[in-house]
Image (cartoon, rainbow, N blue to C red; front, side, top):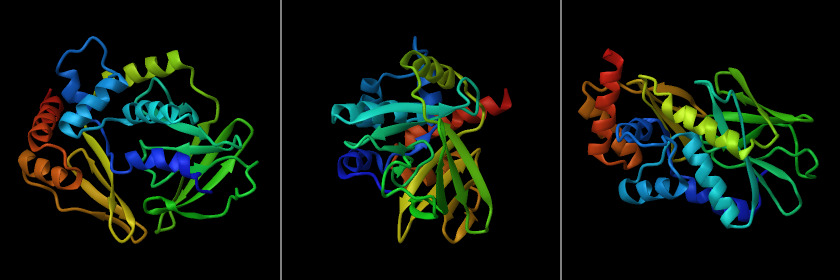
Amino acid sequence: MQAPENIMKVWNQFKHFPMETLTKVWYARQNPLKYQRSVTLIKEHYQQYKITGNCFDLTLWLLDELKRNHIEAYAIGHNLFTEKAHIAVIAIDENKHKYLCDLGDQWIQPICVDKNNPLFHSDDCLGFFPGAKIQVHPQEDNVEILYQRPNGKMSKQIFSLHAIDDNVLFEAAEFSQRLIKPRPLLECRQYENEVTHWEFSNFRSFSSSMKGLVEDEKCSSISAWATKIQEKTDYPYEFLLEALTYYKQLATE
């Protein structure tokens, strides 16, 4: 179910990249003409500040990097033009087999979603998503991903396997970047004995592993949250303080 080496080599360039909405508000405050940054600008911001972005930023950058490495790839998604929008990437190997690459949801690695691959199966898979077993159920036009948590809770996500048109992709990205909710979000992978998932959501945080979900003690101030997130991500403290302060202002408007 694992992707071949050439796809993994590109994916691993992003393995430490968080998904977050902090960069969104930081950039929006600069009153840009377009809220969706170009891949060139996303890279510049990463080089300067070590910040990444939301699922649209990560997907656009991953697509660009795959294509630079001569790997066929395209964007997929669901609930576009809504606050529940999510996008990811399908990468295609030399045998035309498809792999789901989802940086936005902080997958550990890509997974095969092509039942024509002789190595494909729909049994439980470990080591692909933090804190959950995964099953993949491809259908004619979409793929259903089932997640089973350690407490037995099941959830699912359905992706269309059809490519998103480039114009629609950029319009949906612009819509998402302009849709600023007063609830900050940051998710990242933590590489310990197992790859775990750490999430900061609206001034609460918790970790997910195969042992279950553990909520952290709440921080008492914005500066304490900035310090905690910096420890998890290596983001600049001043950047975090600025973005979190703006989110607090949004919540009171």
